[in-house]
Figure (tube, helix red, strand yellow):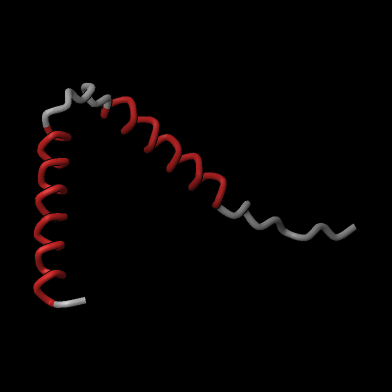
Length: 63
């Protein structure tokens, strides 16, 4: 492909992407529910750490 044509196509596609990005930023976004997500995330981390811990070593019983 000729470099000038490639550059023209690149500029055209970049302009399309800029238009799509501008349209996306104008869309109303729902309010983030970060507090609940944060608490749930840390609870899952804590649970995972508890499951990953090795059980305490038991001393061998001699009968």
